[in-house]
Image (cartoon, rainbow, N blue to C red; front, top):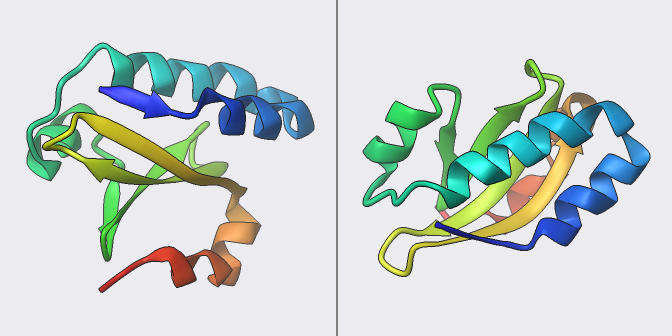
Length: 99
C-alpha cells in the first residue's frame, strides 16, 4: 500500500520525538502489505477502528492517533492527521469523517 505522505509523520515526530519509531514502523508495515478490505487491515492492526470513512490507528502504545483515509481499490493510504491522545479526544478531527 502506498502511504501519502510520510512528511506528515516526520513533521509530527519533529514535535514528539518518541513518536518517530512507532510512526515509521507503522508506515513500513503499511507499505509492505496489500490490504483488500478493512477486514484485512484489522487482521494486521488489531487496534484500528473505522470512524465514518476514516481509519483511526493507535500508535505508540495508545499515546498517539493516526487518522487516515484508505482507498483499498487504489492501494492508497492518505494520512489526514497524527494527533496526541488529548487532541484526538477533543473531537475536532471528526469534521473530516463522512458518515
